[in-house]
Length: 49
Image (cartoon, rainbow, N blue to C red; front, side, top):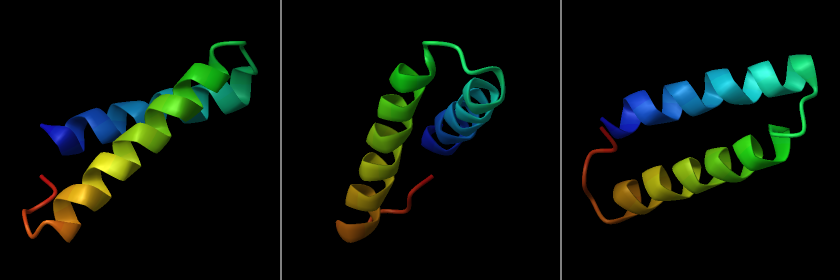
């Protein structure tokens, strides 16, 4: 489920980069949060999926 959320965030981030909407900053924040969550799960020894 986390992997699906991360993929959706990456797609939205790319869409924000292409269209340059003001929501792009919000999408960047969500993308960073998703990456941090995945890294924390890997560091704790759990699979990132």
